[in-house]
Length: 343
Ligand SMILES: [Zn+2]
Image (cartoon, rainbow, N blue to C red; front, side, top):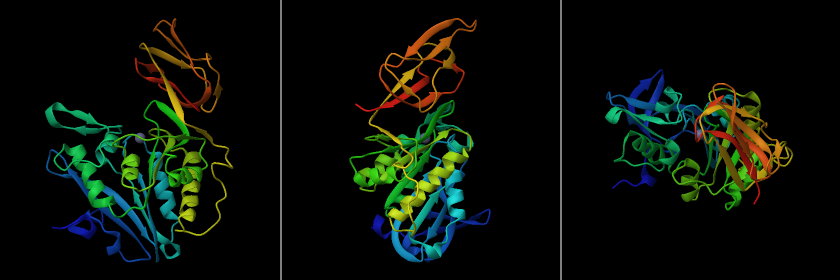
């Protein structure tokens, strides 16, 4: 029986927009010193066609570490695609010792809908947060099957280190922010090579890509770049700087690390607290990203349709503003302000 270790790259013979389709990848099958483009065949749709994931791979002329740069797990989070595109535009595989894999649209179903969630057509429709599905299930619904195919046929045995690029969800914003599990010193090192605004030392969550990699002894971090749906050039540029530092750290490229978390005076916290709407209504946020707030400071309020204040929100703790709700209307449960702090 074939084991994962023996998996070879499989081309099914299809070509999409000039790019060959693969159903399975083994980086050892690729020629060194080249950049490859593939369409990876993911789960099938109800109409009997398939979802395809664009993958770009720079295989260095010399052997070395294998780094995954992934984005598109959530379909409304787009800054990460520009990070991977811009980084690959400058890579010369003849200068690399190791391999970099860029996965540009991990969940094309969610990206097509510009939605955080994968849409299931079964029984009139349902939604799945793909960042709770890894390592997936072959006998699951299309979302879990897609996660299974990515995990087993694209990533497993092809990745030594992973970076998953996200942003905040629609109607909310982060600065440039990193989730990293500091129990793993390599994850801490990776996080602190990025000139982010804020870092959360975070134990992760079951089913996320980051935590699933760590469970398989592959160091991984999540970078959150700002807001959903848009490109933000400052966050994109600083993420690329950080990834260059990580490439140097893992000896995939050579150079000097110039701008990291320390030099950017990134704030590192180990706890976060979300202040969420208790009622429905218009929301006014009274703080900015990165503001220092004190305990009992009023940070947001909600108004009824006539403009009367119906609810006022104070921060129960002192800390730094990590995230804001930017949607002017909020219903109960909607994020208003998230505070990062140290306990
Ligand atoms: Zn996300």
